[in-house]
Amino acid sequence: GGKIYVDGIDTTTIPMKTLRSRMCILPQEATMFSGTIRSNLDPFGEKTEEEMKRVLKLVNIDKGLDYEVTENGENFSLGERQMICMARALLKGSKILIMDEATASIDIQTDIMIQEMVRKNFKDCTTLTIAHRLHSIMDSNRVMVFDDGYLREYDTPLELIEQGNTIFNSLVNQSGCAEELKRLAKGEVSNP
Image (cartoon, rainbow, N blue to C red; front, side, top):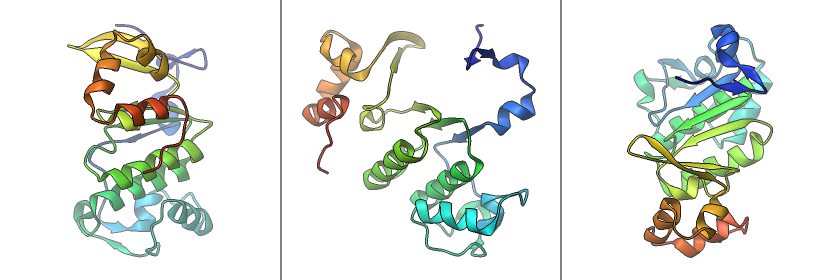
C-alpha cells in the first residue's frame, strides 16, 4: 500500500514509459550487453558521439566507443561495468537515480569514485541509495533505517548519530571507523 510522489505528482498517474525514461537504476550487478560500448551507452542511437565520449571521460573509461563488449560484459572488471552503467545514467540525464547496492561488489576505491561522481554530476537529481556500506550514505540528506522490514528511523545521518540511542548510531559505532563516519556526516572531507 501507499503512494510515491515526485515533485508533488503521484507516480501512478504518470505513464510507465515516461516515468521509466526519467529514472535510472544502478543495480548491484551491472548489466552490459554483447555489442560495443556505444550500443551499451545508447541502445536507441539518440546521443551524439561527443556526448558519449564526454561521459566515458567523466567515469575514467579510456576505451573507445567501438570497443567490443562480450556477453554480460565479461571482458570488463566489476568496477568498469559499474562505471559504464554510471556513464549510461549520466548520458540519459535522469531526474531520479536509484542505486541499489550499486557499490557492494566493488572495491572501496571504486566506491569512493562513484560516490564522488554522484555528488558532482547528480546534484540536481533525486538519488535513492540502498546500501549496507555506511560510507555510501553518510553525506545523504536523509537516511531511512529499516529493521525486520519496518522503517525504524528517518533523519539526517548527523542527527541520528547525535541522538545517541539510535540503531544508526549503533551501526556507526560498530563499524570500526566511527570517527571517520562522523566527520563525513558533518560534511568534513576525510583523507583516504
